[in-house]
Length: 228
Image (cartoon, rainbow, N blue to C red; front, side):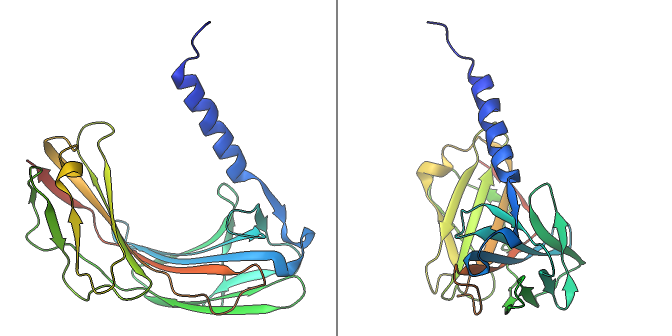
């Protein structure tokens, strides 16, 4: 039996994933009460840009993506979001940091749903420069501890291919995230980069019958560290 090239399988799988992500339908082709809404206010300090984004799907969070049709529209602070055909969502870019805002969605039947969101800043400790891989490491961030509906995800990426590790906490009251020694030990010795995402995901206030999500997300400037 001939062996199938693993790279070809990977490329084929990626092509199917990209194709499926581009599948979308017009929103007027579905029951308006079965539209699932997903809003995000995301600040990326590496770019100094705030993104207001809205994604619409049929029935649930994994359903077919929808492009708004007819008189249906989505606004952020009273201004329309632009359709991004490549990833099938709506987006508005804002220069600098914007910590609060309001999304407003009107469906084809004139029903209107309004949701406000906020996000908080989060930074790395000022003296962070070296991480010892031989023992667990506690990264303590300055500022407030986590409240309900808040999470922190930290990705640590060494200079070796495929050695990125992801760490996560949603512990209420936490002001740090623990990096276990067994996972740190799998990161290569040498320079690396930390990517941190703080998320606030409260219950959505107004949504069609299919429900929805709303998120405030903050990413500080990536931290350059040395893994020893």
